[in-house]
Length: 109
Image 1 (cartoon, one colour):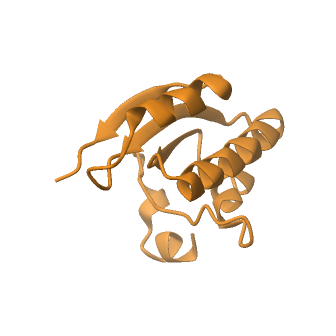
Image 2 (spheres, helix red, strand yellow):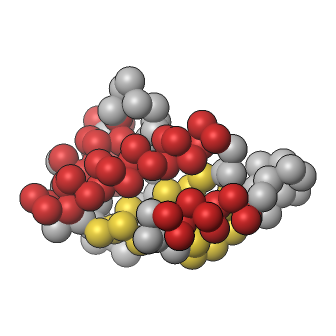
């Protein structure tokens, strides 16, 4: 976040800013944009692999916690088809179980 501030990314009125944060449980880096109110709506890009869904689930828990305090919304999941074995069906099950939605896909190329 400091680097984005140094680059003055937040100084201008923008409709959307896309940046990557670690979804790692240990670091908790994904909470900074929510805690510091850098985000209004959060979308999660995830593959259908176990660890990616595990991280997405943790981020979703954090969004739920921060949404009560900071008026942050969860926009949905974006399926990253990182390889030929990527399964949208696994992600659909996860979306159903978490009452979320898949709003898009990034195709494997």
